[in-house]
Length: 203
Image 1 (cartoon, rainbow, N blue to C red):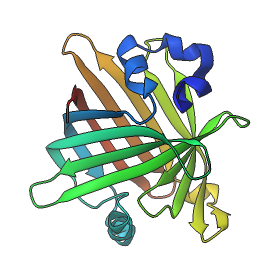
Image 2 (cartoon, rainbow, N blue to C red; image 1 turned 90 degrees about the vertical axis):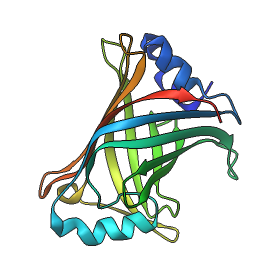
Image 3 (cartoon, one colour; image 1 turned 180 degrees about the horizontal axis):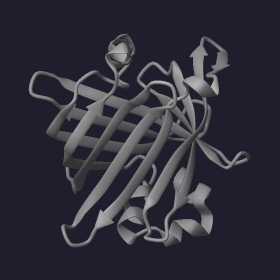
């Protein structure tokens, strides 16, 4: 069982079968996919310094665009702490640059959530709450968020949090996975939003 099936328990079986397959993620096997983002939107120009910093960490980035090719690679392995850890590697192929949005996730079974460390250098952390919709889609929302400085974790005040909403499904007519992601702050509005489709690929 992966961190996602363990967390969702019986709800995991309510996911669309293709999503169950995608999130089963046996140890040391990688799920690869290729797709296209119909739209990627970033936020206010005031956030440009944040985007530049985050892009160096392979987290957020400043570009927006339409019909942007992208790839996904997910792999579950045992980390140095002996925990099951899922790596997320997302690459977006803009005309002038390639941007990445990477993360590593582990399970906090006591709190019933996923711990999401964002970027290749994990300076940003977010709790993620997982649920299944009546349509069999996977819905993810954010909880507590922190800035990691050395061994210290500083909780980000609610006013400055990026509220995350993710909805991943499967379109049986088009035979594709679908993804919608929104990161929003109540003070400055949209931080990032993207929506697209993808299919499994072989590497």
